[in-house]
Image (cartoon, rainbow, N blue to C red):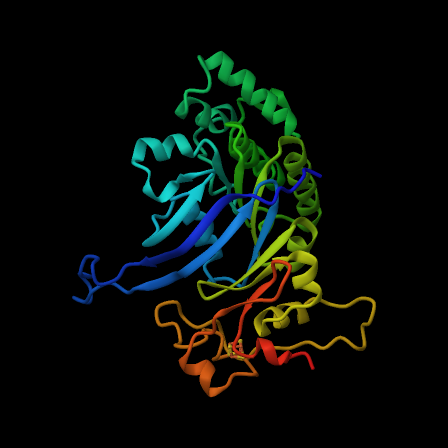
Amino acid sequence: MNEVLNTPLITVENLVKHYGGRRGPISWATGKPPINIRALNGVSFEVRRGETLGLIGESGCGKSTLGRALLRLHEPTSGRVVFDGTEVTALKPDALKAMRRHMQIIFQDPYASLNPRRTVADIIGLPLMLHGLAANRREMRDKVAAIMDKVGLKTNHLDRYPHQFSGGQRQRIGIARALISNPQFIVCDEPVSALDVSIQAQIIELLTGLKRDMGLTYLFVSHDISVIGYLSDRVAVMYLGEIVEMGPVETVLSNPRHPYTQSLMSAVPDVDHPGKHQRVRLTGDLPSPQSPPPGCKFHTRCPLATDLCRIEAPPRHDLGDGHTASCHLINDNVSILR
Ligand code: SF4
C-alpha cells in the first residue's frame, strides 16, 4: 500500500455549487427565473497525499457534483479548491487545461463517457494529444498500448470501437484514459456501480493495484458502504450538499456519530449477529435541493430532531483523531440505534 502522507494534496474551502438561479435566463415556458438547485452548500475538507477518501451518500446528495466541481468540470459558484499549492478555482482556461493533466476523473457509465465513433486508441490517447505528451501518432499509439496492458486490455484491440467491448472492458478503457497523462489525483465517480457484481470486484482490485503502483490519490464516490469500507483510508458522509461526518474509515463505520451515518450503517446486514441487527428505516425522501429545509438539513427525517434542529444549522464538532460530525446532540452521545 502506498504510504499515506499527512499533508493535503487537495484543500477544499467552503465550496458552493448552485445551478440556475435568479441570474440565469428567464424560462420561455414559465416566464420565471430558473429554478435554483443548491447542490453544494459550503463544503470544506482535505484529501491527503496518497490516500483514498471515500465520499458516500444517497442519490442526489451532491457527491458527484462535488467530484466534478473539484476539477471545474462544473464551475463552482463560490469557494476555493487548492491542488498541490495551486488555486484551481482561480486558474484561467489555458492554465486549467494544463492542470487537468494532473487531476483526472473516471465516470460511472463507461459507455456514455466513451465516444462511439472513435477507436480505443484515439479515446485513450486524447489526453496525450491535448497536453502535448506524445510527439506523433506512433508515440501516442505506443503509450496507449502500454497503458492498455497495465489495465488488463489486449493491446491488439487498439483499433476497436467501444461497442466491441464488454461493460467491464469499457470501464478499463475509461481508467486507461484517466491514467495516461500520469495524474496525481483521480476522482472515481461511482466507477463500479453500473457493473455486474463479479466485474465490480475485478475493477476494484485493478484500481487498488494502480493506486499502489502509481502513487495515486483518490476521491472515491459511491453509495455502497461496503465498497467505501474496503477501499478508503478516510470517509466523508454527504447529505443534501453538506458533509455531515468525516474521519478514518474504521472509526466512522464502527462508531458512526451522526444520525444519518448511523442510518446508513444500519442498512448493512450484520452476518455475525443476524437476529440482533437493528435496521433504521428513514421516513420520507431526501428533500429537494431546490428548497432545502432550514436548520439541520437532516431534521425532516431525523428521529432525534429537536426544535433547535429545525431552526439552527449544527456546527462541526471535533471528536478527536480526525473524526468530525455536525449534530446538535453530538455531546449527548445519543444514537438512533439504541
Ligand atoms: Fe438530527 Fe438534530 Fe442532529 Fe440534525 S442536528 S442530525 S436533526 S439530532
